[in-house]
Length: 179
Image 1 (cartoon, helix red, strand yellow):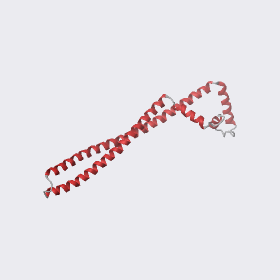
Image 2: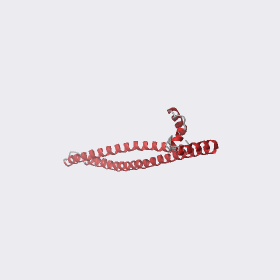
Image 3: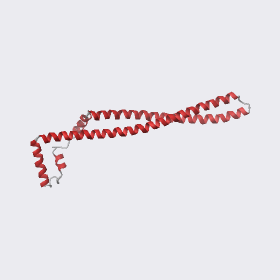
Image 4: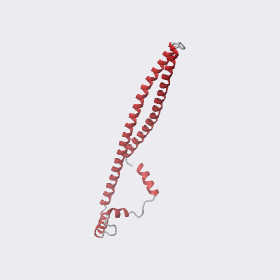
């Protein structure tokens, strides 16, 4: 694989790692938000009960104030947790778009690489007058007598390979391309 494809692939791998990290933070943020909400609901219920006890002179004002202070702290934590949850959600949307763009860039780079290799191979075939002349004779034969390949030049060109590549050859070519 060429350097451009390698760089894009490295960038894609980095984006995938970032996605994993953001997904973990999304889960953590959601759990934190649920826990704070649950604690806040419980504290508010407890405040109603403690205020009733205060009215009956069963507890002092310090217990009521302590619980109110705890609720204010939880409300502040809830605001922070909601903000963090929004940030993580936004980051998840952003990284998803970035990954899609990198994947598109990789497709384009790989296509460009294949086209440049095709052009290079075509140039070397065209540079060899003997091979070019023999291919042109075969092409003329196909056009004049289309029964053998149904007039299909592509079918003829692909049939030039003496055998279909086996899986080992394909795997080897893929490994070489990735390097």
